[in-house]
Image 1 (tube, rainbow, N blue to C red):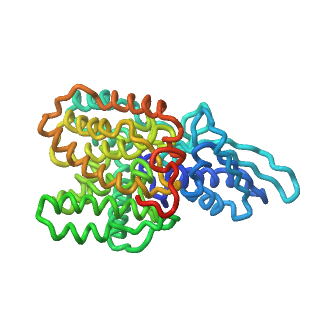
Image 2: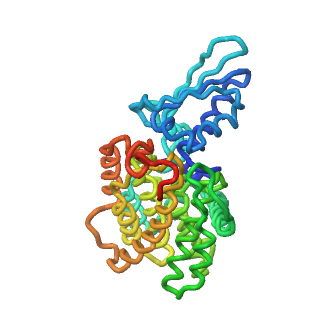
Image 3: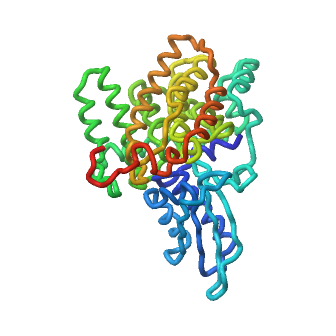
Length: 402
């Protein structure tokens, strides 16, 4: 598995696969052809189908300039991955050449056909949570210690930066009022949810605050603000909401929050390695479902969970999102994406409590659940995998209710 640096990416929203990935690819191609005067980028499949709503063209043109030609080919669905793109370049008068086909495989990661992701070499020798659990049991270690064993102590300075970025995105979103960009004219809700939550008793207040924190980050993402992929932009509100709520309400040491963040990353990394975190490949179960698993595991660790109960929390968080489609209305990361982050954050806390009562005893492993998620995702018709051609997005026209 890759470093957590490849899972927790700090960047601009609204989409890790449709905005961050294409921008990273454009930067790589420009570095290889600095002398070129013209560029042409052909977008395929899901990347073309919802690219306008996800600001794919804007992300690419930020690198090449507005003279870059964008060709949209939603009618061509690549076999390797739905988010395909081909880069070409030319001189002032020459024909386009030097084609490079690359795929945005989720979470901002890139891959060429038949190859692993392009970014960094593997740093983890184990990629099944059951094997990692056994490694920890044999040594009396926690999951976060396996992260440190593989990544080295330098990972903590990066995770500290990740956590501070998450905190900042929550706090910006709680005070940022107004309307989100795009044709839906969707009003931001996080500030109102936060204020309303403060007027309730402890139980309802807790749920309301978690909703507000998740909405805050997701709305920042939808407006192109700085967020952390956890594991993607579309699911970036779940982990910060849970950890921010726990940090604020329970006053745990920041070091424990960072350890929990490492465990969340490990859970997300397993899903990314064995299956996918791409909505275009496996539906929203691969984004919000995996995010819920990450947050549930992190919460369970913070509250003293065992290796078994942490694993159960992760499994439960993902299991109850199996089959969730990715059908963003108008191709925007807004409806139903933003609300799904809020509900998944609350569900992560429920999974933590449930697995604690069960003392970690369960039948279905997290690894098996990830395997089923992959199978389910591949069985979903393409209209339910980030193309906005089916589900809630089908037939939507401006002015309809949400």
